[in-house]
Length: 481
View 1: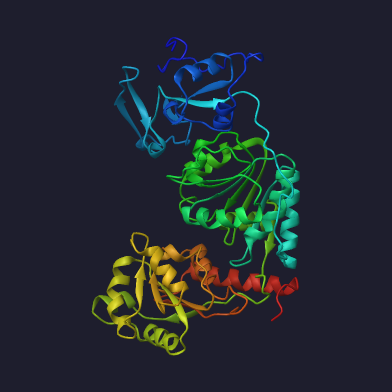
View 2: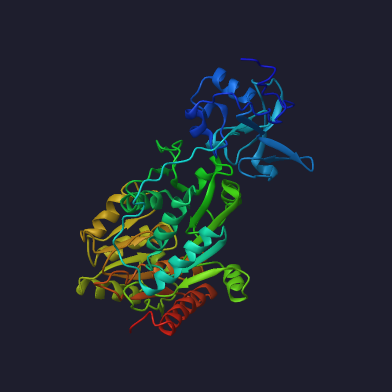
């Protein structure tokens, strides 16, 4: 390989080579690199073949680390925080250079690293008919939102879909996705959590059986599949650059998307300059809610669930200094009565705790009521197994952290929050937790109780938001009761 042309040094040119239109490029490389920004080690083609395409203008190089105001900035993840950079002697270029620690899990990005992108014609996917094969029916509220999604995709607009927990957000996307695919758009659904990618993939494949769908997450075997429809974690968006005509960001209020600026940067750079961005959430932050009220953000609201019953409104119950009681080997009587009532009624329940150690300390006390009660948290190796046992009614009561605040549907369930005053229970988290109850047609109601040692603003706002959605649902005629 010609090292003078294909140099990795800090001073190597990244100016694109002129495109040689008579050159016969390799379709496999075209599909592999279109819309991507990848390291050389991530490209499974010979250096000679890559070099030839580069010299003929079909591959473009971009610097991995640039200098801005004399400080390094990572082009892939947007990191500019000095504490997330470190220096290292590079064996490749023989110099000491900066590298980005923020996106190190995607491969090391340093000053002499180059990002490889496709610079030629974009492949046109074959979209067979029928595109959408879904026989379900949308509610009145879903239909209004679905129409707005279709319009946003056709007009390359931004739209916030503010839909209550259990409103059926996935189904309202189907018509918009079909319209986008028919127009030749490349579409991406991105979500912060792998669990949601794994849940959405079979549902989308069932609705669009003839469409190639790539499902991307850490360790996915499809991460380099070129497909008209991609379902991915937001972390994987760092591998894309000006790739998608439509990006649908699901759960934009969820961790880690809310706290990681690099994920927002990745989403912005993965979309094409002219494109559609659709945000999905049940709990937009205060800034977005204010923008909606002031008419500064395009949005559509689905204030009611498809079964036309109101959202369960949380009850506030004083539990005293429950942490002190648990540490002293006691358990709040109000919580004990609540759990006993569920057990006597043979009603399943999720009981949320703010911290793992306190949850584990509480377990022996609640097991006096039922030895079958279990705990679950993010690091629990039996997490999925316990959730499945809950779904199959093998577990009556499950104590949990906020790991189950979203993405879990159990038909007939009540919900309690212990220590609802804790900072970890934000307005968004409490609304999502309350949204676990009353989701099914067979059991459209449920009890939601916030046990507390002092009411917080987050608790008040969460209840106020739920009450307001019920009011709006009744006003629009979307709630019968």
